[in-house]
Image (cartoon, rainbow, N blue to C red; front, side, top):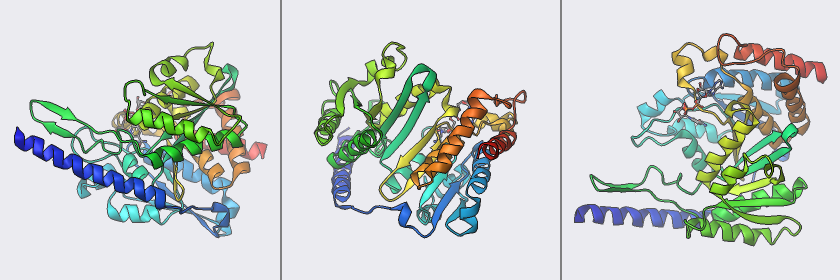
Length: 383
Ligand code: NAD
């Protein structure tokens, strides 16, 4: 037993030193990508696993359509990145094989289809690895249901909490298991600033700081305290403390939910509550997600690789809407707000009002590429 204890203490020491170094590096790093100043923006497209290649191919087609002139003029390059597949990742025993990571880092932004994550074992999720490697600290998920008065934007901290050390826990066989959770000053301040800055730029007056600081006193306590510190730089924006349990209930409380505007949360709570919010909007297939850092940004569907759809031969009926939403967010991020607005308008026509084609995920609905055609025809009709 003493041997296990010694090994665990050593492991904790090395994790602690590594995290102190990470926090220090964050404080020192002032790099920033200004997309408006780039001669050419390289968009990397990762096909991923399961239904990933099917829905990402539709997004690529959509981008070729929307950015036809910019691509022809050499201002945009669409670059397909192979190799972010579960087979390749298992073969290299790496969440992102080195050559794939180098290709990703040679792009400015990434549009990523879902990737499969194995249960158990030590192979880390490609998403978690990409967020860490590219330092994508803000996971931004908008959820909007105008008829219910819902207009929410979630800022989930993306590089800390339980996730960053999730594959590095300690286990003493037949006795116990420990995982680690970390909150740093620099990591919290930057996500808080991203949320309040968004609120300020978009005329929002309220930011909900959602934690479980009454129980996780150190990590969530720090998160809440530092968010309030940043809030002082934003007079006119109210910063409210909420606990994650009651906030989970609030989102389904029809009497109170429309009062919320912007949320800032640690990683795990953000992961869970944004799926709940997406479900209120119409399901995980209807939401996109942005993973934003100061240097890189990655945009993705919020659902997974739906392996059963492939196993049962239904891959071509996968819904590409979530990837299209991710595409819209990406366009907005790199400075094509008008094209993003056009895409948003056309998507609303296709999915909410006109609904000439409906995707069901089964052979009684439209296929992914039929829906892609419908969307592009709609865009052509309104532009
Ligand atoms: P999932 O999102 O893949 O599937 C959940 C349900 O939603 C299934 O019934 C599936 O058929 C359906 N579904 C998902 N996307 C759909 C689409 N576009 N069109 C129609 N139906 C769709 O979740 P899961 O089964 O829990 O996870 C499968 C794999 O995906 C796992 O390995 C998981 O780790 C991974 N995953 C990846 C990401 C990501 O890369 N961002 C996110 C979540 C899960």
